[in-house]
Amino acid sequence: MPDRRPSLLVLIAITMIGQLAMNITLPSLTGIIEEFATTKAIAQLNLSLYMAGTATALLIYGPLSERHGRRPMVLIGMLLFILGSIVCLISASIEVMIASRVIQAVGACAGIVMGRAMVRDMFSMDKAAAMIANLTSAVVIVPGLAPLIGGILDDWYGWRLSIAFVLFLGILITIYAFYSAHETLPKEKRHEAKFGELFKAFGILLKNRIFNAYALQVSFNTAAYFSFLGGSSIIFKLMNWGNSTELGFYFFSVTCFYIVGNFGTAKFAHIFGARKVNIAGTIIALAATTLLIVLENFSGLTALSFFGTTCFLGLGNGLSISSGIAIALSADSQRVGAAAGMSGSLQLGLGGIAAWLVSWLLVDTPTPLVLTMFAGSLIGFIASVIGIFLLQKPMNPTIEGQA
Image (cartoon, rainbow, N blue to C red; front, top):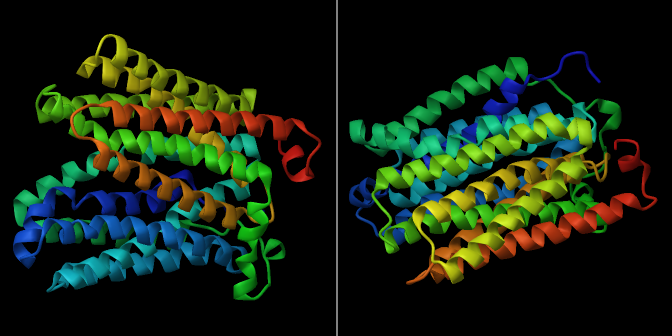
């Protein structure tokens, strides 16, 4: 390992900028529709295609970093993010605006992949789980703050001020990364294969049962959480549970429990091991969503019972997602970058599908949301159990030496 290592702060910065940019335009949808004289469906593409661009580009950065290193991917991604932000800022049509948002997404997601890969380069599996939990704890609050910041900036000067804000931050983070995002993958560990051959890593990973188990666990537990994010505001209004301020408070409470779960992972992963923390988290998440089904069928859901129980889903996910990512990235030490990209793409893809499915199914009852949350938690638990059995078998030295 090189003597200089990137700090946690720079990893937080390159990871959070994409999430900030993705959510900061949410309060500006009406302004975008009016300025470009377009429809709500087309204006929403600035978010949905942003997510699609992120999920696709996640698959590219990982393999490329195995050949060229982590640091160049971070810097290239940040430069693309700046370019996309500039084009978005001066866009004169909705088509250009949406295309520039995709460029933003493709650039920003480099930090998501490389942040995880760099942590795994530097630390053993259990220590990496703790570090990824610390990284997630610091970053997870961004999606909640971004709409608030975007709403204030939109009131001041419209959606372009929000884009100018993330452009300014992007420039600062690029300068910071240039001086602080040191390389973590030595040249002797890189793959010198041709570009096309690098993507064969995905085929190899798909044959790796440990990677598959924990990549699926992370993705389905994330899907349970994303379905909550996508459907809870609809249910809140449908059931007449209160006003927007109260909804914001309930959201914040669930986020706090998610952060507590990540702190728990950071504290206990290197003591008890990532796999034990992981299975504990999936059990808590499954218990919480099972209780939701019981409450809905026998006593009916209230705002307090729904969000109070979902807090424990957040706690369980905080314990299981960071630890699951660390184990998945440890499944093959020769393909950490590809594993980070592939697991991240699957995680975001399934999460987005779950959120869309719930918003489509919800009509007059919370049942579709509750069942989707339960299904995601159940499959996540099953995948974690399978992973435990796989890790107990005589296996490849990559995992065994890092346990």
